[in-house]
Image (cartoon, rainbow, N blue to C red):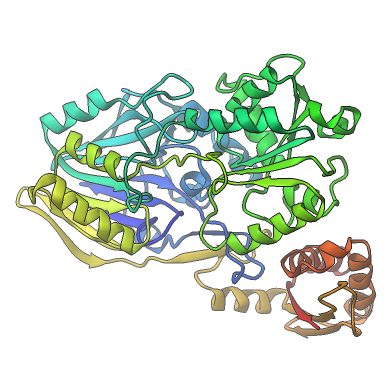
Length: 549
């Protein structure tokens, strides 16, 4: 019997992870993470609940990665201890993964195995085949797993870009061959099922950016997703045409660009790139800054630039800021605040609602129909999306196949079985979210347990501070409350200094930073955690409570 269990990425966006088991072999398809929302106080990362894998009698024979986005590789360090075999991925995927493993002091011992499209590898009783697909970054693959029960196809993230930047279109021929040979089940990305038509080519943004480059008389600042290597290449090529120097601003875009350039996926001509510290040495009309922070992250480069807090890059009247990324659900409010700050600097602001400066990397409805037609599966399982997206994808599949493909609508933890008699949804296994904080002391299954662990270890420090909503000034003495935080002579002295310390932190910020509640909360949390760790040697959970007056 073949067993497939999605552990993340079904009924939600992000955190993609799926276990495939046959006989004595279990492999994992992707191991993704999710960034926390504003309600996840003190949380730095969210990964799938691994209870099912931990309780299994079989350890993982291999981990297979479709591409290098965080929602597909971010949890790899947390599943490493369950893995006996190699990690398979394309060269760029593995290169983006390596720093994450190094940060966790994981010795890979030559277990990262690079593969190319059309490669096949044997994993126990299974054979894994890699099929090229196009997405918003290079080196992406779909996965075909050939099993004794039949072949299953996992699309990963994809779209059908007929004019890709790297000249490598999706391997529709091989997908069609698999359909002809017979596919037991298709697991397909549902992210854009609600969008009619086609997502379009990455090249579709060129015309809009040509207008922006030609019409901008000041500095041009563009915020794509930092892993959108194709978009970065387009911007660099246009900068060369319009005689602008390029500064990469923000750690994420700098690291990803350096990795892509080293592997030959990004071409930056000699003399084009400058350091962010050198931006001020050039006239504004000679500079393009590619920055992090398209989602309004409080401490990202663009957020600091927008409130005039970046050391090297300043916005002036006549500059233009372009948001070349979709707004992830839940981030609209933070992005709106960020755009307000940009407007206060006198700079222009452009996003996809104004010009075609972003193209999705995920297939829209017509492309999803094409995938179904090419693969022609016996069973169809929609994945990668909230439940209403999965349900809509199921309806489309029924129309495309005229009911020939049986649809299995599942959620995280659903145990899907296949054998000679067919496919079915059996019972469920433990599934959910594990919240991670930066110290890894907060690796827990839910928020309650996470708080208990902090309380049992270093406790919690709650800072309540009243701030004037107009000028950001502190209205009254901040109050500090602790629970589970051992107070002795040393820690007590440090706690007495906290109100003054926090006042000093806020005094150093601009009025726009002080009146941005999201920024203030995160700033206080980070700086107070650092202060307490340095002064007391302890790492309590810090919860700032901001009261606007």
